[in-house]
Image 1 (cartoon, rainbow, N blue to C red):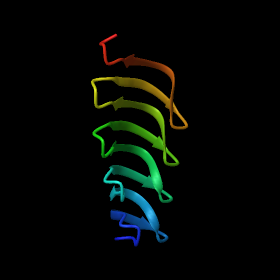
Image 2 (tube, helix red, strand yellow):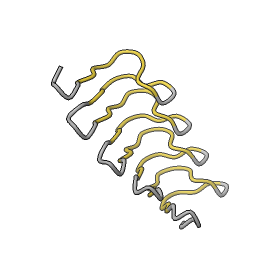
Image 3 (tube, rainbow, N blue to C red):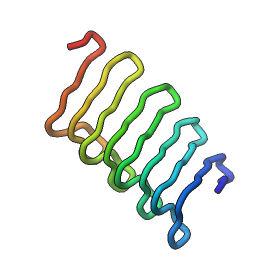
Image 4 (cartoon, rainbow, N blue to C red):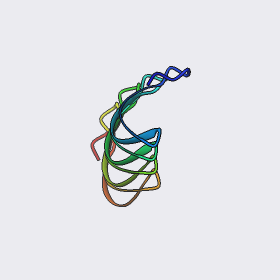
Length: 99
């Protein structure tokens, strides 16, 4: 499906919404590949930002939620728990300087 906004989606549908496995390219150049539920990332997936950052892990209702890893473009990363799109709980954050 190619939307008028230039968003592109290839994958499974149910009741006319993204549902199941799919791949989506956003107008910004970022893209997501993984599970969808009721039109939103939900389950396991990988989101790659146009600037080179990425998140790989669990999603719920379109937000990072559960276990996952985020990698920045300058060597920083966070691996651990996510809740409602934000790092929360137990995890390891590595900063640019290696700490």
